[in-house]
Image (cartoon, rainbow over all chains, first blue to last red; front, side, top):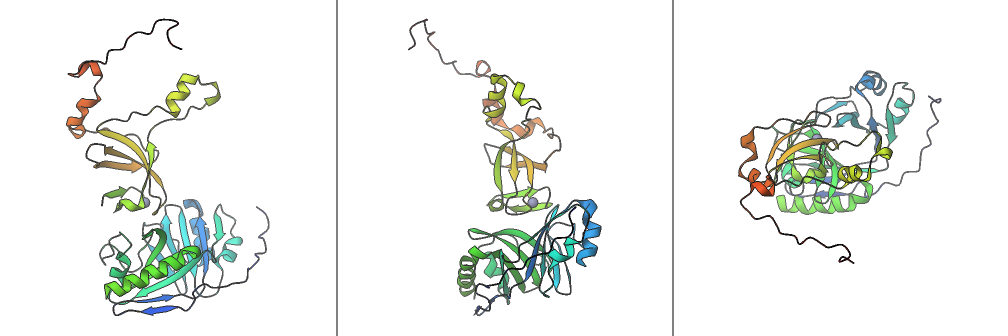
Length: 186
Length: 126
Ligand SMILES: [Zn+2]
């Protein structure tokens, strides 16, 4: 393996950052930029990667592990999305790991949107076909799924709060869709 | 909406998250360059297209993104079972195939006339 490469950082131009919509039953807010990592790894590599990232990579379907400001979301049997809101790039932590894995920085690819309030689940269900009841989708549950016409990653952060991760170029659609849905759900 | 059980997510998920990926258990020859044209045609183009139980590959494309296999009834669209890629084809009870299995019998076992074809004389076809 080559020496850990110096990682170049690109200038950030956040999209819609800080934009908000407060409906009667749900509040939609575009989150500040985060560091994100698309991680693929076999089972054998998980212990070393978990140690480097400081968060234990979950192996149960539809589950996530959050430690301080960093979350690891199970997306598939060998695939995770790591989100860091504390300003520390998880890609740098993986650069020093010598076991087999693929780590791709996708910080700029995604936009995070939070949906909170008593009608947050109903708002999402306007375009997401999954069962979002607390028994099927408890706090900490996460899943790649769809919202209307686009793919999203959904994470339940509290009983009445979710985080939606969508691709940057879809964020206009997602934001409009959720704002509309929140108006209807109220 | 159909609910499809993903063997990797270990639960039923809405059909919108899935994509069909053609018939399952079609093995690619390990020496494909040496294969006869006829065998390659069979591998590449010929599919069983049954009325009744079919084994298909599916992909949980907007979920865990994994390919898996499914046994599905093409008459009712009912998923009989799903299983991980690489696992052997499950043996299904005869009853699972239902009345539609009748249509899959060769024509001479069916109560229908075989289509008559006029033999083409040499030189006639242009
Ligand atoms: Zn799945």
